[in-house]
Image (cartoon, rainbow, N blue to C red; front, side, top):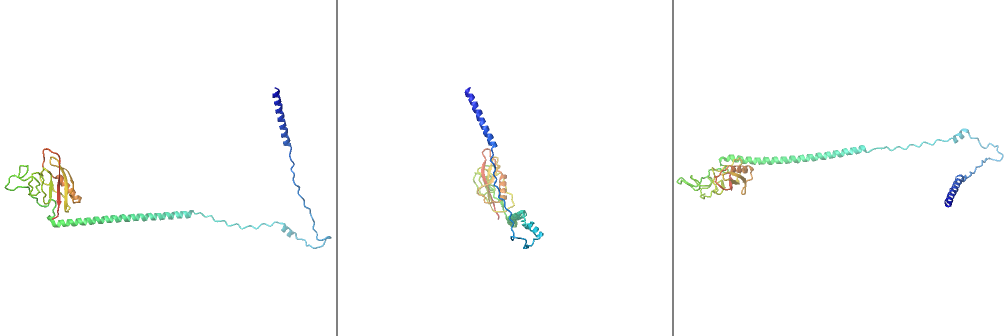
Length: 288
């Protein structure tokens, strides 16, 4: 208890001392010493010791007042303000000029493209006209020679082997004549069914014979050359496939199409059994 009481007394004493110090600091102030300014003395300056002489003329009051009055400072001329301009119109003008140049350039490019296209069309028309003129000249020449213009079946073909004194020819049939191409050569005496090349056409299909005659191509173009048609024949004798093959030296699409269509129309003899057979039909187009 004594210890706690001494602590309390010490704390009260400490607080009291600090409070007194705080009060002293609050009421104690240092004086503000201002330096005294030295005052001037008025001195009357005379002209002589006695005075009273008229050495100076009194100055008019108007002049004294005018001298004492403040003259207004002369007005300074205002500096001319620099005119503020904007480059908006100039930039707009430059933009319009640029757009105009780009438009002119585009128009020139379009004109150049149009000129090239017209030149290509003119060249194409010239080539077509030249080609048509050549075809017309060939057609006119064919018309002039008339019946001398022959196609694949231009003349009369010779028949099979046989004569008036023979009642039977070579082949499997029971009638007169030999087995083989009725438009083939007269020296075709083999019994394998392959015909010899005639004047204008030939066909080859092992073991088979024509049923009727070789179909003639229908066309109106006169050119010389050869078209070899690869054919496939079924057991009934019908051509089930036909296309231009190796050995063809004519590129004319009209003649090629006519040859293929004629080959498809050709009929061969039927057989009882067997697979499809492949062969060829050769068309020789000549101008005599």
